Length: 316
Image 1: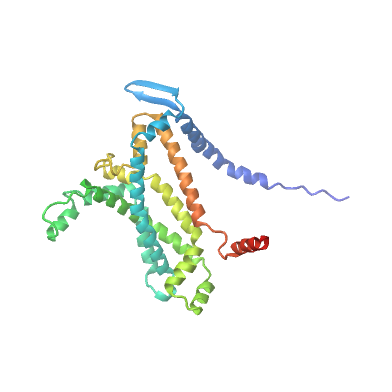
Image 2 (image 1 turned 45 degrees about the vertical axis):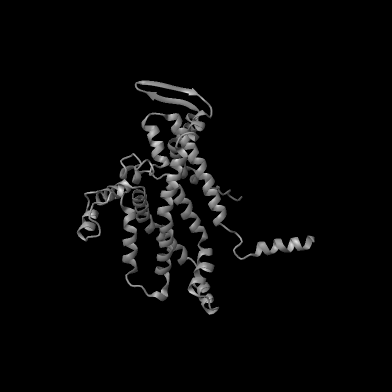
């Protein structure tokens, strides 16, 4: 008589091991998210020592936000993100291509990789305080410019729209271009060297190889970089908050959406803060979907397009 083998179910151990994560996610992320959406439909704020609400008002908070300066602050956020992201992706692509190109024979690659990644380890608040000190009217930058004779008076960098936005963009660029460079280097190194060797034999120039081989093959990483950058841009807060002392000066041209959200939280207006959070969630989802559709192509070799053309020709 054969003895029955006891079947061991390994699947349950997998569920047990991932249970703590889902429990923590449900308690600290999912429930607050649902609560935020719920509060967005209520009038709930504090006036002095008196607490108003929660009273159900429907979509009134959403309509009030559209009539406020929210769209202006959304434009500020977009401009500040573009100032930091455009040079970030360009420089990161250039450095990644240089570092992985064996023909350049660059020395000290590991040292340069560490140097360009170091700013990413510095807290944004520390970065903002450093730049606030450097570019103040009595700061070292003005002293250097005046001692070199480039200007005869102190420049108020933080008093102009161009100066403030440029400093915010410069800080975001310095903090994140190293991280982007490392990711793009990993993506380029994942491309088979045989492809580059074949392109050289076919007479491709460096520019053709970069735009027609490298960029299409690292498109998934570019999509990831762009999506995470968009989400980070919409959440931009600490750098402009510290640099402008929470005022978004000059004339609130550096006020971002999260700074606007923070002002509602500070005034205990939870209904408006909740509706603004929902707006940010929806906009983030739409932008990320658009970027994903634009930067992801599952027909790199053109086989699916050729099949579609063949089917259309057959119908005719």
